[in-house]
Image (cartoon, rainbow, N blue to C red; front, side, top):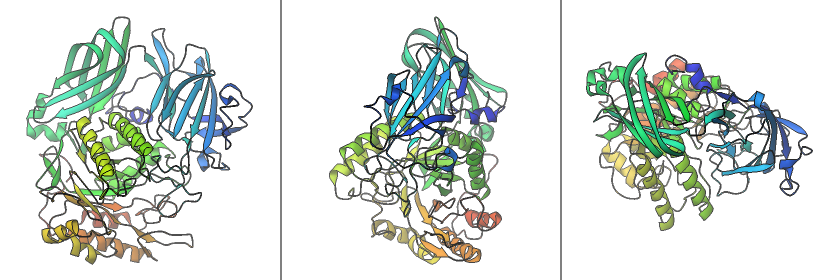
Length: 609
């Protein structure tokens, strides 16, 4: 199960950075029932079979074609039921338990097994698990409640209207990511938080345990392409332990291109972690990308190397399955197309990523800017839910090397009065400070697009429809200062306090050009009628930004068409609207550069760009 030997096993596993060999998927056919009148709890649907007259294909959300429940009434409450036996589950010894894992259920979830309520969970994009009882047969029942009209509920791009409108799409109610079971020791490795310090050439592994360890030993073994890098053993006690691993090879900069994780040169180190406790033994497989992230002289840097960020916004939506990828191959194809078009960064927009998507990005060497789905009103519930779920994501995805930037807020969604309301400012600042307190290894964009407080990157959203407009706004430092400290390109101030002060300045949303190819409703910031017009319009925008002597990155909107929002570089079917090679020419901008910037490849220091 080494990443450099068996990539397929890595990507198939729902939790690629903490893998055990003994697991099975519960995806597939489940019994299903709608509960529009909220009768299920009173009538004890968790303990009877009669209400479940239909089937659904998990993990696809009801209403989607791949769920095989397209006739879904779009009610707020749904129930699932599945009977499994020990024969359906991975073999286990007496010192192990079966753990039932849910990658994502939207939004409030209750789980019963054999009539007993085992867990309640809140959050549509966070993962959770529960141990199964010692039985030979299990009736698993899941109730999910997803209130359409509750705008305090973090929902991102999921529409609260009955029909998708504007830039919002069909919602995902209920189970929308994998359900699976693994055999786990009673005293188990629960999580591994990897963190690499480039200055000291030291990797730390903070290992969390499922229960108190009275005494035991933990070992960490690292290898890279069959070359052993390190092996450390330490005694442990308590609920967690931190193991420090020296990586002396990282002290030699000429070796970095063969050792460290860079965009375009993604070295991944295999890790095997073992926990030995009297009467119990756990062994998990993981991986880590050794890399540092910081800023200097207006650039984002990876391993002290300045990177010009060439990003694209990814909605992660499919007409046949909504926000659930139709298959692993479809997700992988999206990322490969992104790289083929010349981008080195993908912005995971208004959703939490599938953990396998992150593993793909880790493996392919593309940077990820990770967002969180916004609520659309400011309330005590919105604050509580956002804080709790963001905190969970910071833990869940802490070790993915491809994530280089956290983006907890976008365009003041859910904090519309942040420029004038002290309470909303405190809330935004508290999320930013929480993020930095838990993760000093990445950058934080405070409120992407405008009305930013304490942000590591000054970002603007600018949907100008011509390159000339962009050039006027960003050509040099004087123009950028006017843009940042003036009314802002979308009529909202960019910074609420402070100056640029050497921070990177990037246009993190631009583009939005729609190619209208049918009579179906088309939405975009500008609409053109032919591929030739599309190519001219898109080329002009890239050229306008590349005239800047100050910008050190941008993010194009968007990767694919998404329902009525037809402003992708690719169609919904992932077909380029103009030849891919021509898109790559725009993206790389070799003919447009007027700024002295890092070259795209340097073999000695490693990495693309």
